[in-house]
Image (cartoon, rainbow, N blue to C red; front, side, top):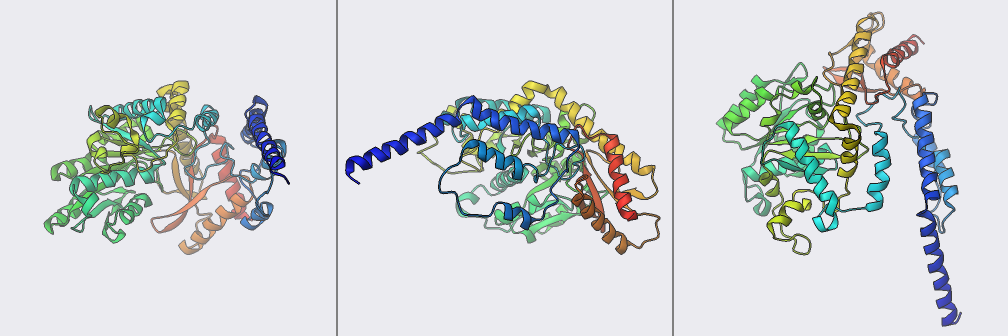
Length: 489
């Protein structure tokens, strides 16, 4: 091939590439994805299809086995593959019988917003890379700080979720206790204090920060909440031995039961002893939106930091987390480093450049979908969704009380309930543990619905998290009926 032929071939390849890109930017290309998404939503809402796949991991892997494609395929072929093999075997969170994990069936307006977030592809590292999204993040964070009552110096950042939010909060708390730790490390061995039902994110943060999970001090629970009297005894003992305490982590909406720690009592102890109180409200902080439920968070305004996940009870698509702090200076000091190629030194830049107070540098504009959802539904609309989810969990609790073959382990404070199949009551605890684990597997494998399981008070239990506003009392009663039928054989 001559050099002229080679140049011509490269130009043809370049033109073909530009043609394919242009074709995929058209309305017609977008409609293919919109139609596939809308068809999934319609089928999921009908409740006629399976909630989750009946295939095992090996069967699914076989469907996607093969080498990396060398050349591209028509978009219609790609969508056909998605429609036939991806969507049907995924978890259908919009199905009204999906009552499993704390993952939302996203609000429709947030689903469509995702395409806009991806198309704009703004990076929240610095204002010049995201001139509108940076301003929106500041505004939305301030709205949430106001809801929490954190005061005029409050601020925060969006995160990937509660795990990152808690890690960042504890990093800020470590810096407040040891201002030179960023450069010199921690010279004294500190501890972090949390409840026995705290999320594993706290232990993960202890490991990442170099505190060590063996220096995570857990406070016993009383009724699935941190026991304030035990907390006081523990922190008094630590202080008597001159052991530094980075923070006390309270939980608002625990993962196992959705329970809320007594934030007022914990804040009293932290304020009296000058301790940093972090509230892991990844699941439960959305109760701040609700007039009916915000009382469960009384005392949260006294926290130094709060983790909050809109991708849980605000029904945002993954991922959308937030960290709120009572004093923005605490968060600004958490990451004490310079990057002159990115961050400027001007006071205005320091306020607007969110990368200064975020663990991540390249970070998508997740705030946009939250802002759009608030514009579409308002606080009152999102509160109504929150209250409905909690009411359905309570309806399940009442349905269990009316039966003799199930028992509820607690009255729900949010949208989570743990319960247990006990049958006629003749089986011993070990047999019931095995039976409940088996029932969960058989129920989920049937495709009829989806629930989870955990160990509570030493017993294997079934667990429901109501995340879908279209799940109602008839659905939770149908779930009980099906589980009981499986137990009967």
